[in-house]
Length: 483
Ligand code: NAP
Image 1 (cartoon, protein in one colour):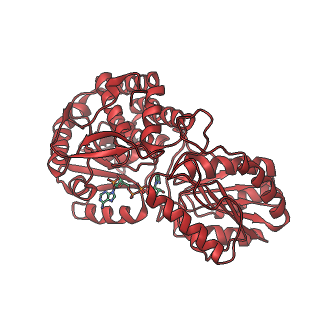
Image 2: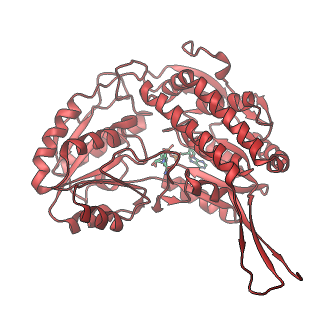
């Protein structure tokens, strides 16, 4: 932690109603690159979660009543402070999460871009006037903030998953409470420090950090003062939280797991496809919801693509994220390492061919070798589950129809990718893929201007773009009569 220049960014307790709230109990935050203790953090529970919801509720009316231009100004100030501290925030993120420093810097800028984007959108929360069915009436439609928004976020993007939600919520006039993943609370707390420095009023942005997700989650999904709950995480936990929200009929956004197909057609630019795959598959050591999970390659280019990919993967540098040349950091914990190992071993036992890697890496206990396996089939566990590791499984197909059927044969529907230079095929395939986001000749698809989100069991709701405010506003219709 000595590597953080602005020491005020390193916090060890929840931020509730503009105050740092200590508790007697603590939990440990460890560096996944070397398992060393980074910090002991105050362990908040149900009582603190409730305090945060009540603080957000008390702050809501005055925040919602601020002119949009003022909310915009404060969000922009938050954005500027985050970017001013990009280096320190990135280092903190790498220490607790493990991703290479260059990627962590990218995540800070990516998260901040939502603050900037929604600072602009805050001023454009337009309504409508609608021609009425009779001459003595007028119909006016307004958009109003939903109220208190609560959120739970995962460890794989400790900064951006919070910024993406909070920026939209605050822009719309909502107040906000977030529980980050227990493995990565420090990035969330640093965001709270900068929100305070930006002048965002007490109670508008709150962070509750704790090790008992179930107990905190019960408050965030069921408290009567909560109007909306936004979750990013696994589909299994998302389903449970959806049920918890049902009783109170809360508004809900679910950004859940994925199982992205990455299709390479015979007519693709293979070098571009290899580069796209490296970006999509190996970023964050393969631990993203939009990571290519099943790589489908048409028979005519299968061998050539596998050869080129093997060369590219061999050059990837594995190591502690703080080293400037590292491209693949550690997995988040030992459980993740065991899961990735089992998926690879299972595929090989069922007939897949291991070309590169396949086991843990000498860089440390939680590092996994960049891995390439071929002759994978759709019925193997590695094709059905989110791998969440630096493992590229290749599958062969013959026809366009077969590729589409294989790609869609999953309960997930977050991101899909394909490479083709045939314009007719581009439109045909894009149309038929049952996914919320499709990268066409592109491996990196997420940015603040675009609507991020999934279909099927990958969830619902969109983050970013002009659509990103919809989930945080209610439509109110005013009927003026007797005119
Ligand atoms: P996870 O196990 O679902 O955890 C996510 C968050 O939920 C964490 O804050 C966790 O807290 C909390 N949580 C776990 N069980 C809970 C419960 N019973 N009640 C309330 N909260 C609970 O997922 P993960 O392994 O951290 O994250 C990876 C998953 O997130 C993958 O499936 C990935 O695809 C998905 N993801 C989706 C998107 C998207 O935008 N669609 C983006 C990023 C990641 P603790 O940490 O304290 O356990």
